[in-house]
Length: 70
Image (cartoon, rainbow, N blue to C red; front, side):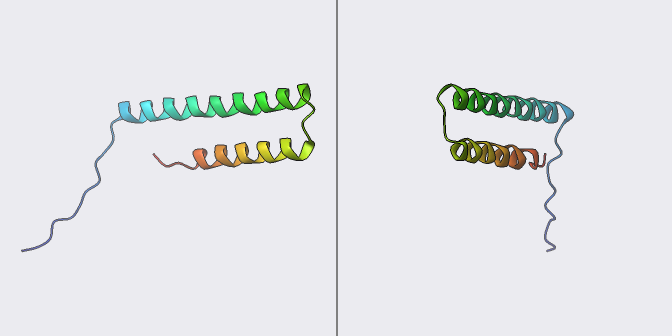
């Protein structure tokens, strides 16, 4: 007997729309968090190296999320 080929399930446009909305919400959360770090750093005189490290980690997270394939 011949082996059956596996076929990936096709996603519907509705599912893609929901995934897009979820990714958009995550993107907004990261942006809000980056803004919060900037305000927090100014209010509490955080060392510049700490702020830069936090900003870099958030930027890396945003980049990873942007590379998610749907």
